[in-house]
Image 1: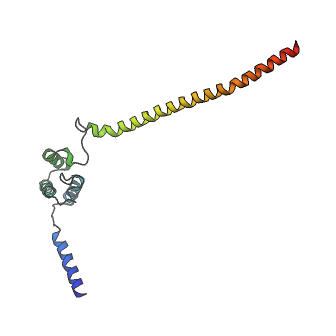
Image 2: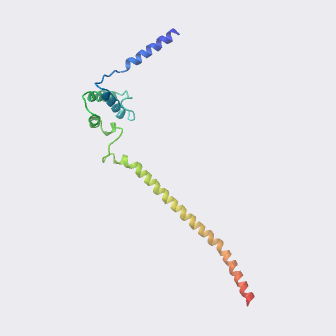
Length: 160
């Protein structure tokens, strides 16, 4: 039991030692740094932000973000620097340009295509139902028409 508490104490102290204490000039800088590190994507991890990633490139990006924020640069300037260095991929919200246009239009095009497909399919099914109903009506009406015609002929013969 004594070793359990000792190992637990050792683990807690090791975890606290790994946390980096960063000093900021103002709470606004701290908030900006936190926002940027959650908004920038790690190029190596691909779907993890640089705040959560321990990849070497993410650590470098965090350090550079910290440096730029401490120099007094605003969010747009830091994002522009990171995009120019690592490409538009590092930002979770890619800009609308000729290279990313397909990313923005693809969902809308898929919805429109699906709607067109459903309308064409429904129209084809509607035509099939109408033609089938017409065929059934014609098949049913022929014997009825013959029976009505026979009745009219009988009535005409009786009168004559």
